[in-house]
Image 1: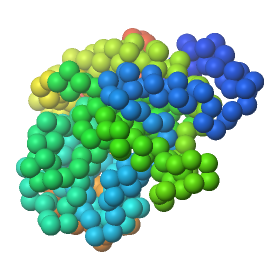
Image 2: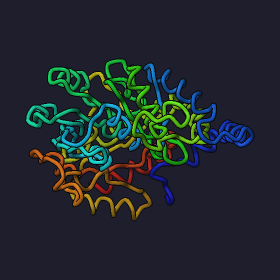
Image 3: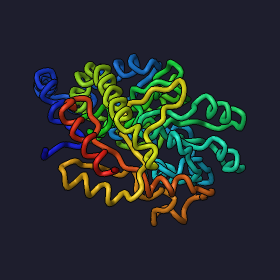
Image 4: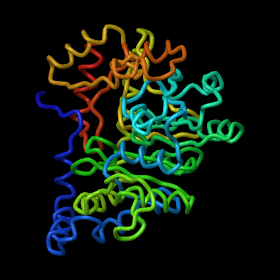
Length: 369
């Protein structure tokens, strides 16, 4: 079998072609390409889906986090606790506002921030925690929020990979003061370009972030804050609206595909292969289906030779990136470094057929036999 996609966006588009094209056509006709009516419509639907009071559509997941940090007043002289194992934007946004990232290790079971290390990371400069929901499930947000409350810290939930996931009956993005996500095309809910969202129940933060999103503008040409150009284009909002309507079904399909993978790979545990673990009271958006394997390069080559794509998220910790190694505080991160050497993700998307998944499973079992 050839040309298996890692993520099949074309199949998803074909299923939604008519409503997406209708929505795009409406934008072309009214011509309000910036902050058109579809922006407010999407924001209302996103807030309803997540279950929070305010949702803001912004230009990317990275800008969502930057705007959030700015609204909280975090900047030079402050420190923000982040997991060492994540996409680089997690630390990048901290540096962009002039603060310092403090890298802590992750849990080997969930790939999320190690709660025990947060205590060690504290200093008089600590102002916030930026926990990441890696691969699709949230960390223990009750414990993180309790720790933050005890030490008077802010929490910004990085839900770039967990939009749609549940934690103790609540949606990801509604588990702390601020939740941020990405609508990058490959994410669980993606637009057709860059995009992101911010979520909060606090009126004051929502107002501040709306102003920051438009150059710090409170009213036309009246600027009360320093801001950024962080708006999400109307066309992207028009695309996300029909995609959001299909999204609950897609989450179900992602879960079904993940369970099917895990059942098939149980026999590999004796050979040192580790399948994903869901924490109690959690569901996952399954942004990735990630294994831990030995001899990763050899495994990937065998799959590639048989038409199965793979990806590594991520081959190097943020703390070990050349641009970041000397600009943050780094705690002991042995788990993060081990994961950077062993994790590998298989194709995962809601429109995957049984035939394609059976072939992926067959080739994976052969490559690891």
